[in-house]
Length: 261
Image: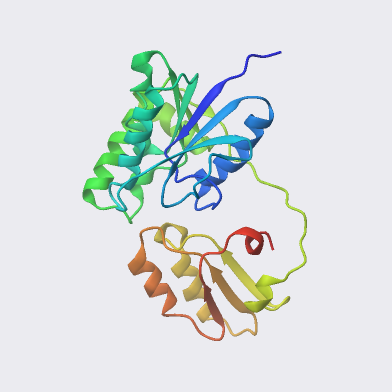
């Protein structure tokens, strides 16, 4: 039997609500690792994750942070790293470029670390000058600080090879095959036929405004339904919602059973 590993996930918001790809990773990869017999600890933010000790076989550690667009992730990652240094993990797994800044600390006490890079976060328009600068440092840290670096696309792997001269591990994100569910909650928002659905965060990088602009030029009985929330792009989200009409429905964040539907 293979020895059990003690793994910590650091950098995301937590579990239960799948706010982004990182939280979905926690939920899916974490529970499968736990089912395989490994000990998985997820560091969560107090305001995001309910007061639980465990979830789907994973241990939860809830820590505070400031509710700040620029500093929330960095402060929580720093506190999580300090806590992780007091534990005997085999691997501390950091997610995204900002948290990568702290991936060298566990190595000082002999603990291996990994960083997963899901995108070039500093390119996103939602970040100000200071945050973009820190994320650029995080990109450099993701090269030099962890024991290993993982990327989710071949394009990122090529970029790290050509620009940084390092060979990363290509580990693409997977998908979950869900059972088809009879619609119930969503019938309050949409009709069973004749609609186009956008489901995700409202951010400029996702091109939500292009979808709205294109749809407004169509002559069709089909409805456009957009379900999501802002990711610190409140002004962008408010602008999108000004286009709400009988033909364009703007919903709030959807999760749980409604998301599955």
